[in-house]
Image 1 (cartoon, helix red, strand yellow):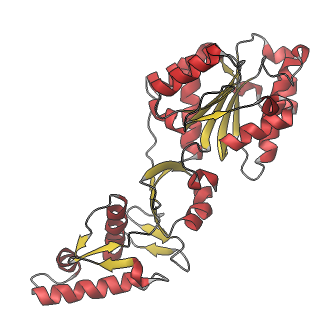
Image 2 (spheres, rainbow, N blue to C red; image 1 turned 180 degrees about the horizontal axis):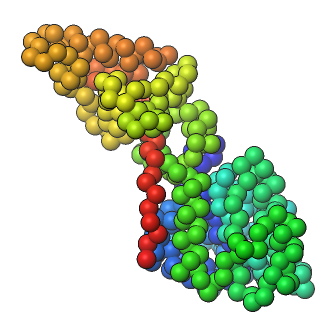
Image 3 (cartoon, rainbow, N blue to C red; image 1 turned 45 degrees about the horizontal axis):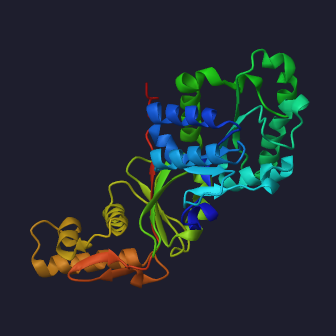
Amino acid sequence: MSWLDTLGFERRPVVFVEDHLYHTSEWLTACEASQPDLLSCLTVCAIDRPGPDTDAAVADWLARYPALQVAALTGLTDERLRSLGPRDLDSVPAFGAALASLLRPGGVLVQDVHLSTLPCVPADRWWHSIFIATHVRGLQADRPPAVRFLSNKRGYAATFGRDLAEAGFDPRDVIDKGEVATVGVSVIRALVDRRFEFELAMRRPPQSRRQRRVSLEDREAIEGALDLVLWPGAEAGSAELGGRLLGRRAPLRAGSHETATWGDLVTGALAEGPGLSVVTVGERVGPAGAERAEVTNVAARHIHTLRGRLTEGAAIVTSRHAYRLADGLAIGRVDRLALRPPST
């Protein structure tokens, strides 16, 4: 999965498509003001004509919003920028494929219904821009995106509302551009929270720690890419351990010593900490008042049980009187995000 493997520019949960630079700027201003956490989930695709104005706007967005990604018709270079070319815009299938390559499966596509700078859409049938979103959904049929259109046209239901319905879109979901700041960004943030309800923190050497919004539908891809990944369980305080080092997922009971130790090992590995003191582990799992030798033996038996879960017991190492996960492992921890009230 490229969104897990790629460094630099990546597929993201939200793609925002506009034809005019000032509308994109308005959207970004609204995001920063009320939903700033949305920026790290967002790629804006600006298809205004190439030239000095586009270059200046793109450079300004990248400077002002460090978490943002941009796709645009520009010759600028940046690790958070993807340059589009004429071939990307010369047909509805080509542009749909370009957008699908930017968007995570199951994500959210936000698109102006009138992309006037798109040469493949006739000016007298401007509402045909909606079929770009149809093409994206077809390319991601296994996990189709949610689509929300933007419009500043009054009475749109009388003109292209039927086309929206026939293409499988609800005209009631069209966001008025005049309400982007008060309604639009909150609607999109709520969609992201429903579709990507977890956060993955991962470390994949030689990469440093990274964080991504994920869903349960991403689980197979995540566990295929990481050696160990800890998920929240169905019951409060419980967990599940998965990843390439397990023959099958291991359920971990709430309140158990094993759940606590796996949590500490994974969290410590993500923080690149020194590990868990053997004595501390033994004192936690052993009887109260035990002598040091017994404490050490109890800890060793406990860690032996954990190693038994894995296809490679050497994944848990003992170093300097502490237990930790081996340095070369790809580690992840998934936490459920609390639903947050929209900012005002």
